[in-house]
Amino acid sequence: MFKRGQMILTFIVLFSLLLAACAPVVAPAPALTPAPKEEAPAPKEAAPPVQGEPVDVGGTATGVPYEMKESVFNGNPITLVIWDWHTPRVNYWKEITPRYTKMYPNVTFEIVQVPGEDYWKKLMAAIPAGEGPDIFHFHNAQHTPFIKNNLIDPFPEDLFLPSFYKENYVGMKEGHFMDADGHIRYIPYGSMAAELYINTKMWEEAGLTENDYPKTWDDLLIVAKKLTKYDASGNIDVAGFAFNGYIQYLWNDMLFQQGRYMYTKDGRGCQVDNPESINALRTITKFYDENINSRQFLEWIEAFGTQKAAMVWAWTWFTGYMKATYPDISFKAIRMPSFTGENLPALGRQNYEVSLVVNPRKDIERRKVAWDFLHWLYSDDEKLVDLALMHNIAPAYTKLNNHPRILADATIADLSKSIPYKVFPGEFPTSVDQVFTQYVTQNIMTGTPIEQVVQQAQQACDQALQEQQYWIVERTYAHDDKMIPNQP
Image (cartoon, rainbow, N blue to C red; front, side, top):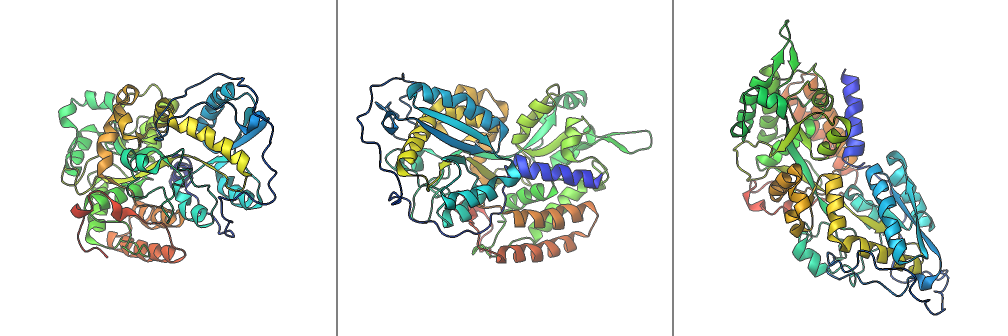
């Protein structure tokens, strides 16, 4: 069962957290703004008359209204290639790109789905060679290698107004999407974080109401006892709260809730061996001690989906997974508990879902068309709402939190209230994730003493961070003054 759990955890990390894979170092790329000498000159013929018709024009979500041009690429035929790994987004690109083509009939698109396990390696090989897609989807886990090696074209400031983004988008004031010179390299769709998922049928059958929603971990323990069911031999049949296979992420949130950051201030060490970490793991293992969950029980995702768990803790991608995989199960996502019942010092970790970007090694005329498409795409409120709903995230464009379609989604509407109290640490590299999987989740599952767990995890995590410098920005958290003072 444990091996099966590891397979499930691997699936979750690779696909739900969108494949935050480590990338190999490649040679630095040349400057992006001048067109390479070998580029073919732009066509000189006069632009032909407009052949298309306006579609979704006038959007202002980039700070610069999108206006239809008389033509793009001087009316000459062009096919833009888009790469992505995520099936729902691939289907969305296939749905909306014909709308752009309706405006500019000379522009067509080739949408290529690249398997997640190959995605970053193929990009890192193709872009320096001047090959690969014109446009590709990004993930901020690749922030350092792609910006360091100049593999993303900076967003044009005449189309994506920096001052507008800093005023209206989460994380922009903090510089979470920019290079060291302050140029935007990718933009956010929104934020994802964890919620507490409840099987509403089981909740009601136990005689529980909204007044019983747990605000603290102690509250959760009480209601979880009421929801746990046992077989004739006294073994758990339905876990009140299941978390096997996800322990390191739950533990990570509990660190932030106690005011403890993940990393040292210089980003070269972890903060694992400390009282807050021990308290978090003791809180988690208490659910084993109280026979609410068992180390021999199902993994959390399987348990909830098969109605063998009444409650689980999960990032909000889980809403889409449940609706697609188990459409007949009724559930609700609510604010996750904390140690005090309050939002401060923090509620846990969050991460951003981010945008398509442009290949800087394509010739400048192709890039102009690619940027026009992205300007059209990201100027439109409705498309940004589409993307937020697709990813089950709170919109990054803050005004959209009051959009009717966002308010109608219970998970996102609730998540948007919690996001201001979630910490974005920066990169969560695969090397660190693997350390926490091995030295936190696996050790707790095998019953290793907690003091030994944190000591081993501390040593392994420090070693992982010494291998290369990562992009660490957790201390830009809005409520940094509420976190533990004078941390290393």
